[in-house]
Amino acid sequence: MTTNETVITTKDVRLYYGEHEALHGINLDFQKSQITALIGPSGCGKSTYLRCLNRMNDLIHDVTITGSFKIDGHDIYRPQQDVVSLRKKVGMVFQQPNPFPFSVYDNVAYGLRVQGIKDKKIISQKVEESLKQAAVWDEVKDDLTKNALSFSGGQQQRICIARLLAVKPDVILLDEPTSALDPISSAKIEEMLLQIKDQYTIIIVTHSMQQASRISDKTAFMLNGDLVEYGDTKKIFLNPEQEATSDYLNGKFG
Amino acid sequence: MNKMQQRLLHPSKATRQDRFGKTISLICIGFIMILTVSIIGFIAIHGLATFFENHVSVMQFIFSSNWNPGQLGKNGQPQVGAFAMIVASFAVTLLAAILATPFAIAVALYMTELAPKRGAKMLQPVIELLVGIPSVVYGFIGLVVIVPAIRSVFGGTGFGILAGSIVLFVMILPTITSLTIDSLQQVPDHYRKASLALGATKWQTIYKVILRAALPGILTAIVFGMARAFGEALAVQMVIGNAALTPTSLTSPTATLTSQLTSQMGDTIMGTLPNNALWSLALVLLIMSVIFNLLIKVVGKRGEMKK
Image 1 (cartoon, one colour):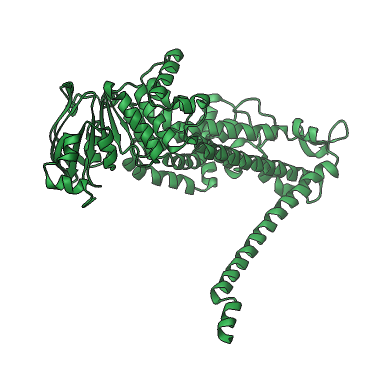
Image 2 (cartoon, one colour):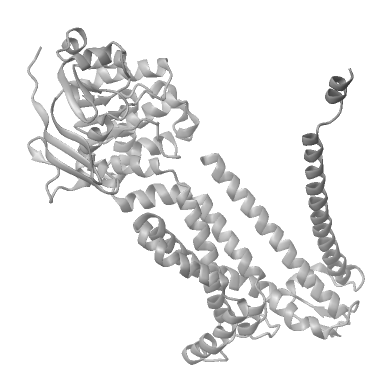
């Protein structure tokens, strides 16, 4: 295995909804060209943690976050941090496919146009490239002007991923990206993630332990706002250190 | 047998109540339908009498601006030309909508996107108040404030399309605003999140995603506002000047379809040409409101397909 540089370092992350502490001091690092899976039962805080990394929690009222978050050595919560440019670097795919009610082309071109790119040739080229990367090109290439919402859920989700890839983020956060999809669509997305992982740092929250074991290099198990165990996926699944981890993996609670 | 048989073969109490309720609502619906049809029929019979009984040509009615139904013209034909009123009605409606739309969208955006809490608290009562003010009050304010202001700025009498449009602008502002707010609120939150997560600014999100997604709703809101402006009579009548002349400028006295109706209806005798001519104006109003309704349906349907 090659040694990978650490892209994201988080230390002692605590998050409060009002007075209630939802994350109790989480330390996690993420490496480039790796897929890290965050697993754990519903409400354990894995999605909440994920949203800290592109500051989507800023949109929620009355949330306080402490601890340190460094991406490429820069504290992303420092006062002079531009949230907009952070989110260009750290993209997110949501649980429900959420394409805009525009054509496929306009969806994928959106991020580029937002960045001020006007050259139609460059946009077309990137749209095609991104849709190919997201493994949805063959299914939509004849219908690029069709409304993105007229496609199936799995196709919509890959269009959303293409929309994200078009802006060339460094980090991709996926918040249960396949939980609303059928197994075939999920498999396509997993395969695609494995193909693109070399160029990105990918963090995926998932409820499916099979998914985590299939695609991730590292796995973090969270429970009730605590990080219980973090390590190589193989080790976590075959030989977990903590009892809670093995109980969860064996389906003793969920 | 048979109690069981009897119970099974006879409608239960719940079924009977169900039927009773259904009958009552059907009767009410039938009544309203008859009412609507008879109103339309009544207006159509009288409105069309101008053309069939008094033999005024439709072309003359629409394109001539000679309005003097009580007298015959030089050619021996009655002078029933509604061109001036039709033009003035459309002019005040369009102008009011053009004035009101940017303000309505700005206010709606402030209340839904920029400052949902504070904005709603401050502006909601203002909008509700604007809706509640009777039109005669708007007309009165227009007469006392706007007409003199226009007179001193532009000269002339101050009565005319400009004064009418300004009064209507204030009157349709709340209609367009609240319907625009509705359509902005219907834009699903995940569009906003998706856009922000892609590194768009709030403003980019608003004008590239939210306004675009809400466009059919906003267009419907504008058409609703225009329908209201087109049909408003009293306030317009007070500031338009009430001279059945084709407007030569925004500040020349003229009359709209509605203002002509309200100002003249007391002076005509049922069954005579001048009276029939007014009915014809009412018919034009009715047709226009049908067109506005159809427009709203068409725009709304297009929006549904997009969602």
